[in-house]
Length: 287
Image (tube, rainbow, N blue to C red; front, side, top):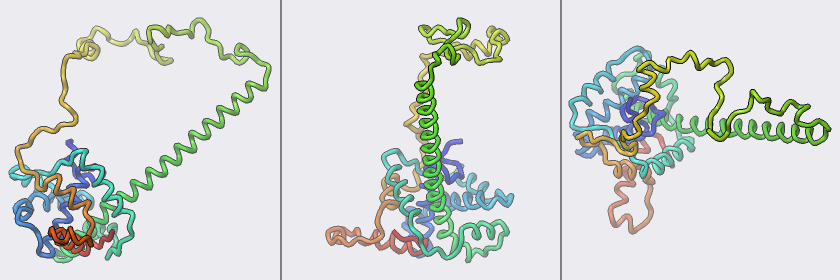
């Protein structure tokens, strides 16, 4: 499945669209949602609800089906963020994950209540944005911790392998046995032709049993190198309008809530910063 359309917080494009959608959800709650996002709200808001439903895992597919029907007929689409924007946006989410904000509740409890269908519409509107955002940034913190743990395990394994290799080399240097006594010489049967780059088949594999003459096998072996595949760096044009511009999404996610610079205030930047501060208040976030 295209990573842009998966209800999967592990994928960059999903996390960016979800995070920005939650920001706009907060704008709607404080009555400061811009008209262009009112027009596309049926798409991005139903996408958030579909994602939340996928987390609750109570067997319901109502909101996912609703979102897919909306997307099928909508003039809008989710936004694809290019490599140019991904780095700074990732860093912004990581910076949020590094804080310990005053969360009014626990995202895990939030999901449990969703599974039991224990929220009224009013309660969900009140706590939903904060819980959704904190679930997203909790994933960021966990992913960072998991990465650090993997790197430490790899460092320890590499150090152990190096120590074992050095110990073995020292042992060989301290003994009088030669390569023949250590059984390290290749026999004639074990030698392989290094010049042609061939590699012997794994032990126990009988290549004479492979159906080399079958059409499907010949198709696998006879690769047409003249076929040019799609450029992985380009995406096909959908013909729809992204619900938020990639530059605008980048600027919103990476902006600081408070701006003190007088020059920026004269240009009206303080209004954007003030809005972001209000959004962060709804989401119980701080930077």
